[in-house]
Structure formats: C-alpha cells, structure tokens
Amino acid sequence: MRTLELPVARTMFPVLVLLGATGCDDYLLGGGKGVPGGDSGSDGYNADTGSNGGNGGDTSGVVTNPEITSNASINVMLQYSGFGSDATNCMFDVAFYTVAGDDGYGSGGTAQMITMPTDPGTCAFTSFNPDDTGTGGSMTVLGTMDAGDELHASNGSFDLSLTKQTQSDGSIRYHWGACDQASFPFAQALTLTGTGVDGGIAAFSLPDVIAVGPDITQVTPATSQLDLGILPVSVSQPLDWAWAWSAAFPSTSEGPVGVSQTFVIRNQRTSDNQLLEALACMPTHDGSMTISAADLSQLTPDPGDNSTYASAQVDTYFMGAPSVAPWGQTVRAQSLISISGLLRLSE
Image (cartoon, rainbow, N blue to C red):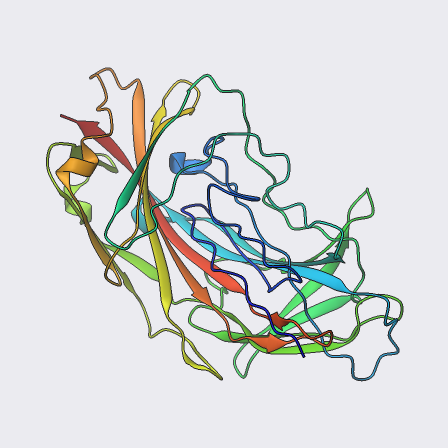
C-alpha cells in the first residue's frame, strides 16, 4: 500500500485546506496553484487562496467501481477582522472530483503572488505593481463527483451535517450551512464520514482527519493602543505581536496537534484596495513574534493623506491525523483560524 502526504501549505491568506493527493505537488505560496496578492476582502486582507486535492474513503458497504479514483478537498476556516472584534468568514466545505479534474479553489487567479519566508524568524518582502489588473481566484471548493446526500464531520461532542449543493453547471460541494463563530467546532478533532453512492464516491470513514484549532484572541497590541480601531505603527521601530488560544490544542489518534503560523503585513492603496507591498514573516514561537525595524522599514509609510492603509494578519494552521483512503493514499486535512487588524504606517 502506497502512502503519500503533501507538504503543509503556508500562506497568509484565508486558506483552507486539503487532503493528501495522488501526486506530490507543492502548493506553497509562490509556486503551483497559489494565492494571488490582490483583490482584498474586509480589513484589507486577501480572501483568496489556493488548495490541494486529496482522497477520502472506506469502501465497506457500497458496491464500487474500481475504475473510479477520486480526489477531495476540504475547506475549513474561521477568520476575524478588527483585531478579533468581528468574525468575518466562516467556511466548512468538502468537494470530490476525478484525479484529472480540479476543485476550482484558487482558479481564475492571475494576480502576482506574495513571497513567503522559508525559515522561522525571518521575513520576506514583496513589491507589487498597483495597476496590475490581475485578480484573485475562487474561494469555493467545487467537485464533479457525488458522495450521497450529505456528509458528517463528527466526534463525541459535535455532529456537523454537510449537505450536498449542486450548482447550475452541475458541480457539487458539501456545505455546512450553519457555520458561524457560536457553533464552530473549536479545538476539536473530527472524523469525516459519508454513506456513499453507487457509481460515485464509496462509503468512507476518515478518523480524526480534520483538526480544528482553538479560538484565537489578540494579546499584543492591546485594544488600548488602537486609535479608532487602527493601530499606529512606526516602520522605524520593532513591532511586537502576540496572540493566544482559548483552549488546549486538539488531540487526535496521533496525539496532540501542533500549530503552523504565518504573519503578514499588507500595504494597500486606499482608493481601490490595490496591493502595493507585503511583508510576510514566519514566527519562531507559538503565539508571538517581533518584527524588526530592518524588516518593517521596507514598507512605505502613508504620506500623511490617508492614501494608503495597511493590515496585519496572523494565520494559524492545524493538521489532522493521517487516514488511509480505500485506494491507498494517506489523507489528512488542515484547518485555519486567523485574526487581522488595520494599521497606519508612519516613519
């Protein structure tokens, strides 16, 4: 039996993520099916990302076609803006598609990519052409294969029903329609199951394949440092940033789940939200980072007329346990919890 695990996608964007696929493609930012830098959402942070395909399943109980080999994509995220004051994006979707197909996530994106650092404690700077007409890709995973009327993501405390939605073009996704902050399964490991359908996706059970991180809160800067909800930042001084979690990390059959983190500042033009610059950093410690003045000084301060604005975003990723799909690949999914806020850059 062949097993395969894809590398963890490390990106600042609202991502979300994926199952192990049938090939070893690298979807890190800056290569492959990545994340464009433009096309901002609320608080100026990008709402587009790339994702990978994957596989799911257990063939018990359903007559299957051995010629069918499918991929799947899982998209699980919760994002906060306003330094945690607003939950702006909640998503929990699954899609299945053929190996030769695609999940549509990130499709259509033509904008320049943000360069990401490769070593903890370092930052990478990217300059953009603000008049670039490139756009971000789709945030929705869509498939072409049927897995029955609904899927379930569950454990002893949660049972989330993902209902089948068929689009006008015939594409299919499994969607948790009740996704919001109050009902989100923070700090949980979830098993994904489906009853399957003849001629499509077989019945499957993927234990602990989704690990969802605990709720996140902003620690530094404190709200007392904000000016009308915006943090004044001097690019000539180091910037301390810290965040905390409301509960312990989830545990799976493999043990406690670790966290992968990124921190990105994006500098944008106010008139049309076009991206001017980005500074992406990789924290060395869980829950904190200091960005040096040398790194910050690469960003251009606002000239004093509010013609530009900046935002900072922390993304925290949690990887579920590997689970063997019926056709032999190792399956695992990654979820995202993020928090962002607006900055005013000065000398």
